[in-house]
Amino acid sequence: MVGWLEREGVMTMVVQPRHFGPGGGKTYKLGRITLTFKTGAADTAGAYTLCEAIEPPDSGAGLHRHATYDETHIICAGRYQCRLGDETLSLGPGDMMFAPRGTPHSIKSSGPETGVELIISSPGGIFDAFIDELTTSMAAGGRDIRAIAAKYGIEFLD
Image (cartoon, rainbow, N blue to C red; front, side, top):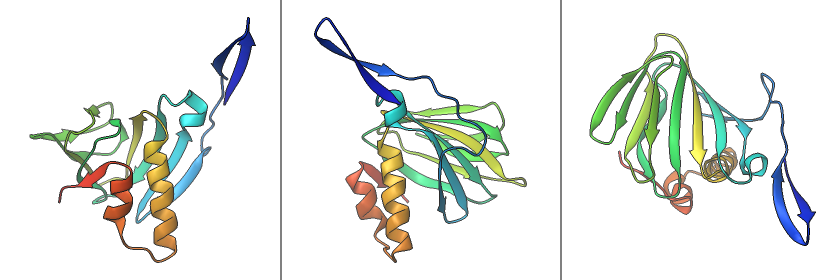
């Protein structure tokens, strides 16, 4: 968590160390994908959000881009087919893909096993707020995914 420290009349933001155990964090189901947010803007003074994504084969994010944050994907398990700008990539455990804001990209678990990736978005708070609003809307019967995405600077391209 973030706290404040006053020293000689100057307020300084202080980020507190934390441990995040397995299974910890806020979890969302988005179709067949499970997203668990391990850290967010409140934990990192707004620097980044860290999310674990568990994706069965043939699930993932279609071609999109976001103007408001950068995104890094670190593959922990499984195989993925991705697009990054004009490149098509096959990724496996240990591979990393960085999509600076504005770069079209997609990521899809290609199986045969379930894929696991860590997603780091920077600055923090945008991706997690989008997923929270999206899943809340979908649970209430909402279907206007593109309008919600647009509020967060996200544009779907396929």
